[in-house]
Image (cartoon, rainbow, N blue to C red):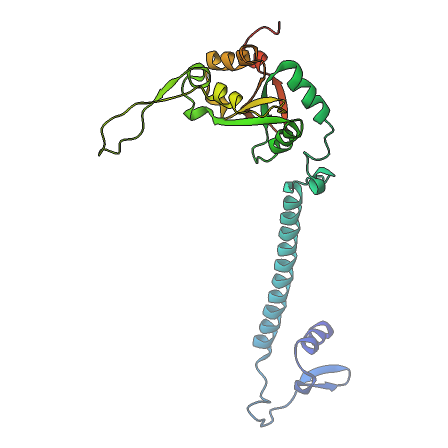
Amino acid sequence: MATAASTLSYAFSSRFLIKNNGSFRHRPNVTLSTEEQPCSSSACYQGAILSYGLQKQRVQLNSTSKTMTMRRLGRQKKAVVRCNIELEDFIGGDLIKLDLGQWLSDVEEHKALAIYSPHEGGYEGRYLTRLKYQGYHFLDLSARGLGDPETTLTKFHPVCPAHVGKQPIARWYFPPEVDYRLSLLPPNAKGLVVWIIEAKVLSKAELQFLALLPSLRPKVKVIAECGNWRKFMWKPLKEIAGLSQS
């Protein structure tokens, strides 16, 4: 009985219980207001148990949600990719490389180089500027509109202008690009650099001619952009074209 009484005292307010000789009993039937009328003992006991169960479920749900959140955070932490920050990220990868001397010596030695620059571009301008400081002049060409390199660079070649459907088809003749530019060089010029972009579309035979062009025109150097790489690098064009280094 004491256990039941203690349970009831926990579930009900003290105004609904009367202590008599160490035990608890309900108040006698007294006319109470609507707000003070108590519910039946079984209904109130069930309501107390139900509220306690709801609180317990709420605690369990909170703990489960916390556990799931921690697991999700753990998975996110495992999936994070961190990149180390180096000096190149603040200065620029092309500005701290001490390879300009090697670049100039390779241009003078091999006379035809295949270069590979990063995809974002801009790195090759530093090496071009260094050659310009040495006294070289430049002839910039695109490999996609070059046609036959031997004919375009060293011979008189025909060019058909666009007639746009309103003019007759004509054929104009232009002088050799390399010979014409060599004739316009000032006396103090060190030479002519033929810089060809998008050279990756050229065939091996066309690359071989470009590699041999400096031997045909001694004052000419050839730089061909043959592809992309993570950093700026270069190789002898004869090696790329499959020619012997001799």
